[in-house]
Length: 214
Image 1 (spheres, one colour):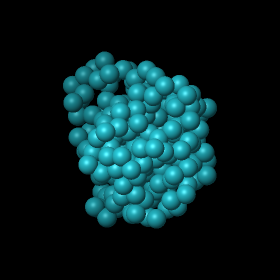
Image 2: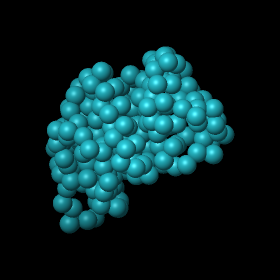
Image 3: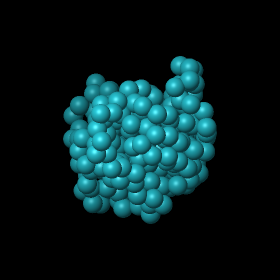
Image 4: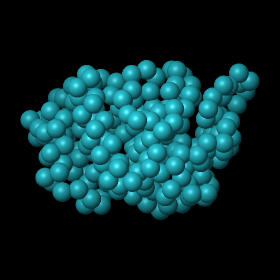
């Protein structure tokens, strides 16, 4: 997949508003594979909704979202399954980890769908992110910042053309934020993928190709 296009897209909850000033809502926007984007937003402007629309978890919007020119509203369940397993990976703001499973088990569940990454590389990411000692710990016992790092690793253990990361470093210090950014960029470059980062303030220090105001 080479492009994600938003054509005159707007959350239904905003349909009656006449004061929308955005680089995305009600615009013609194309996100291209291999490019890095920052979506800057204020709270309540639809940042997480945008991610949910693109990943297909919500459809309460006006306009169209196209993948390589194909209208996502026409996708079957099989189409969405293929898209989420091999073309778009998502790091959710609320993380969506399984609290009763260990950090490694949370990653392995995702990796088992495609067998994309080897154990050694995954363990290397845990080490680089300073949570190697948490691999066998239940996620519920980890801090939110540690959980963010686990969620990022989970997002990277699949093939993808685009990586969506919704507020990925909200609970990380500068050092861990930079390590996460480096790992994310390295993997995206390896796969030739695009990255879309959302933020309401603190954001990764990356060489963004374009900054969009939501």
